[in-house]
Length: 503
Image (tube, rainbow, N blue to C red; front, top):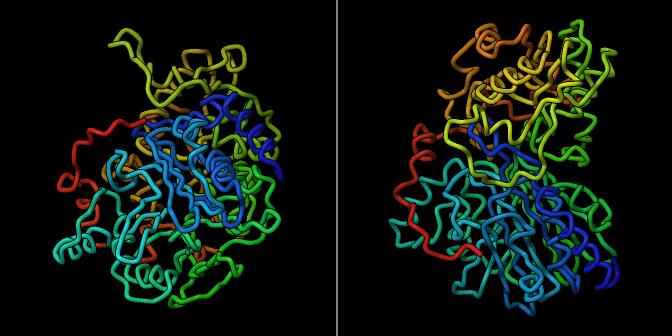
């Protein structure tokens, strides 16, 4: 990784793999939880943009709607952002224009704000003290109120994302140092944030006091790296240094790294769904291997709900490790009963009504020879609305499954997430509407068992007080505005029609 040629070769190799290698087939339908965002930063490398491109590529699973990189060349911020996957946004000629030895990057899935170019991060502005850029992973529960207050005082917003509130607050801060202005801004927000901010001279990395979202520090020679997950450090052969602590501010500058804790102490409550669904299995977050936690979820499910079966299969891909853990514990062989089409992009042309359940079939197809006549244990990471699960069960029955025993790696989801996982309103959640037995009948399976909260926590090795479990038990670690759902669902006041070319 020490030469320009080696970086270019690695990027060229990634481009040759194509979109299917990064998209991982995540279902963009409303029946699945959606990822939120990922951030990556480089301080002190002559090819900071290329390293950031590679880091964002490894974090593509955290957001597929847009990507951006901001580079600093002697204080001047150079930016390129676009709607789409990393490999689509950063064509070679675009990447070549991003010069400088400092960079921050972002991949986005919208949890607040519409999917237009102006919402793609890092957000970049010119203000009284120069220029700055901010990339934010998380969701601010008081963003709507803060935005109204800022607008009443004359602020002009260019996007519909809650992250722009942070930029507005930084710009209004009176502190002398840029890092202190960032802290001043973040002390006014409530919710989840792992933030990278830069003024071209330094990079400021901050994790909220409750530590909802992961953020890592890495090192590549004398270069300092920041990344949402360790898999992004691995792709550039960077050393894992440590995780940014909840409530910690880490500043990378020409003087090195500086760390301080300016926020009121709080008991960390990281998001459990990072383990269940969001993070890549080859990452380590919150002090635990995602792969091992998911296998532990599977082992606990096997002990909780043993059943006689001929094979264990996953609804790919985030359930693969859970299914392996179930198989290891139960002794029932694991097999690939569903084959995922990894060449499916974000959109496709669907025939009118000539092919039933086309949207599911184009992404998942049963392997007849594997499932025919078998008693199958199906493992899925979660059930949100239940519509996709129901279609999968129908396909398995059609292709000859003798029995279907459905196991879910997390407990019933009965509430919306307010901290960065894009979930439907709770009235749309099947577990809010029905009991487990009613869901079993609705899906058409022989048995249905959800993970318990205790079993989920056991797989992590932590206690209940160490996670945010609000979507499972309504115990949220921060106050929520009474109008939160209406604010989140109705952003029409701020939404404009974009006529920009999204290329």
